[in-house]
Length: 143
Image 1 (cartoon, rainbow, N blue to C red):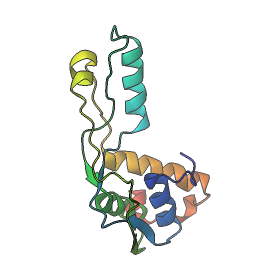
Image 2 (spheres, rainbow, N blue to C red; image 1 turned 120 degrees about the vertical axis):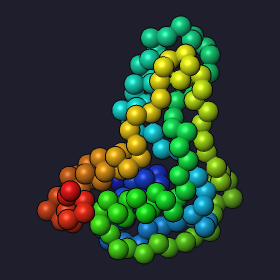
Image 3 (tube, rainbow, N blue to C red; image 1 turned 90 degrees about the vertical axis):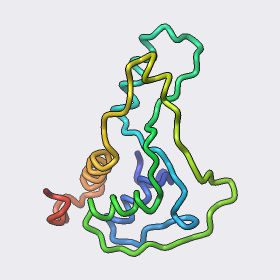
């Protein structure tokens, strides 16, 4: 992810690393399902090697997390005390996302393996390196 791509994970991680207020939209109760890139790649590889031709298969993580939970996990990983700021929820923003990965589990033997917390830790470490903030690692994030 690019640090300015406008996605929620990169936005919140960069804001936390820079000790800027973390931007929430709506009340933060809308959910998303985050899947780490290595899990998705494994799912894509299994799908490409399968006989499922034109059959739709959802790849993703069925674990729902609220935006507030995501912000808490990121703040803890970074060691940030930055406040949350709340902006109006865009009209077209979905309030819930949760993929049904039943077909991927049954036909591909696939499911996500990387927990959200570990994926966030890896993402924070990557952004720290790219933003040149490695020397600023708080005690919590370093352990």
